Image (cartoon, rainbow, N blue to C red; front, side, top):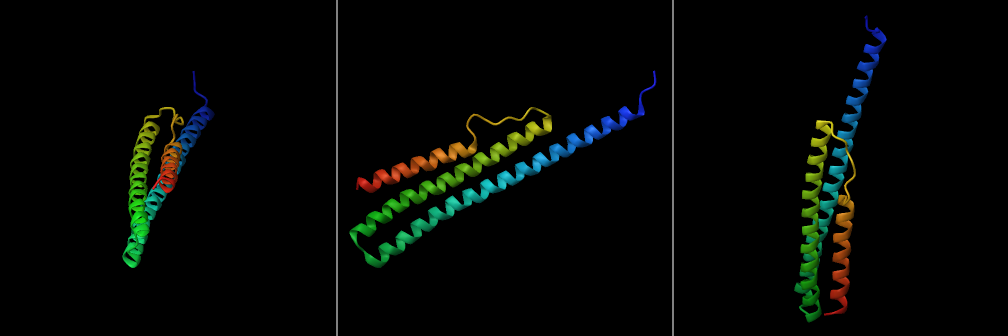
Length: 137
């Protein structure tokens, strides 16, 4: 029984579309990971900036309140730097695992705890700690 030549063209076209879809998905994954790197860098930069700003304030005024603010800024700054590092590591792991699943042809799905939720929870906890520290010197 002879095969229909039109079926071969359709099969080739379908394979090409699947390959392009995988390629577009991998590019989208790259863009998402780069966005997370920018976000993480912003967290870390803000943490370093906060510590530096309050260090300069302490050196300029030498008041007890400035020293207390500097100590709080160190805690907040370190927390922001840690959040930046953790989000970079988690983004890299997520990128690597998703890309591996894509290459294997496995079904892709959204995890129960996406990186955005994890980082939002960490930042919210940091904010609550900052408020608690502000009202309980």
